[in-house]
Length: 519
Image 1 (cartoon, helix red, strand yellow):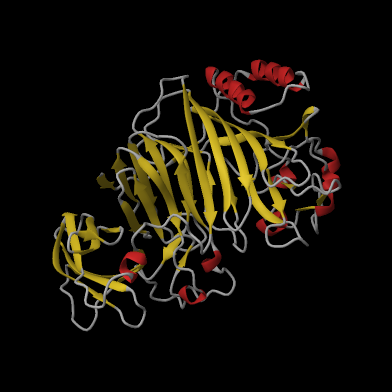
Image 2 (cartoon, helix red, strand yellow; image 1 turned 90 degrees about the horizontal axis):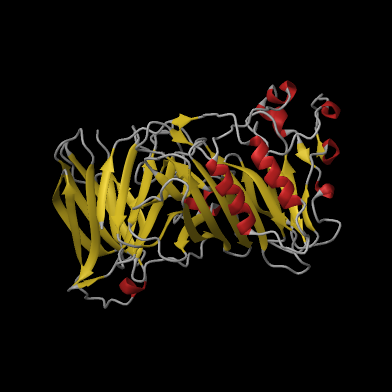
């Protein structure tokens, strides 16, 4: 496995073209008037995506009425869907669907359909389904606006109430919850040129098909059509709620034009500060939706990269022949880790991507951007395939997305990092030195005898010199601690660190892979 890092600033693009409407409209009519006995499925959406990719991109030209665009943030939040109008509520099905209104930041509408045994039915916008609060608006003049997005509800935490389970809102963003969790990081359908290209592109889901579940169903199926100036795609989401909510994702992507970086299964999160990068003025010890990137390679290595809020954008990548999985994880799970009685960061989910089938060679890429506070998502991670398809040829990718809390099944088999701290102890450090204190815990360490000889194996492959490293057991917690003192040889360049614990020739832990940003 090869690790690379670079400074790259992402940027954004909005482009538009002006044809293909008649062709796609014709295809819509064919689909909607097809034989009802023929079930609607992924292949129907994929046919739409393929045809869409053969034409020029057409951006959304219509915008919501001016009075909706002029709403303030609080005024927009005052528009709420009426729960008693939820799709399938009257039929007492296990899942229900509610919709988001256009306005303020959500200005691009999506078309939403219901799939039943009788065929496909478009769900039109109806102003009567919304409570507009204190807003003085004229919805009777708007017509069929469409929706900004939707959310699926399910009795996740008890039988008396249907909780929010998964939300699709904005571009190709979606996020889900396991039992007892609060919303945190998000997933996306696709990322294009987050780094490496001239402009970042944000593909968006333009149309959804939600399959009506049977009574007693434990999963719900959603199809989506994705579009952007350089890509088109079909997606299937099979959502299975529980203590760990699992979404099986199937996608077929067609490129319209060349891209520098195609990000598969992208995850987006927030890291403001933590014990590895403490805040001098904030009373809270940590503030983040995720505290690290975990990667499992096909060769059996497990890596942990603590997240940072860098002064300038930092991009690192982990190249490998085969991927077993990757995710943005929230390992700090105690209230005392955050001391935030409102945000409850200890209840934010981790998200783990498990490939279904072989994805071949490629790299996991991590992009960390500077953020002044916790209101911005500044962390992005995704898979970059080693080889892209030719224009118009399909790229089929499937994966399982795990939304999980304290019970994380994707731990390394031995032991893993529980915290990374930075700073001096009693002894002072030289101006060009940093000290890290890393704690590990897990079954491989628990099984060690009291007199076990454990050593820290630490290297600085890029721009670093290891001054001192130690390993010892912390009697108060039972964890094993690795301390590392490193000299940054060239302060204007980042420094790569790698470390793990070993007994004799046995590797006991995952690899702690850390970056010291340029000063």
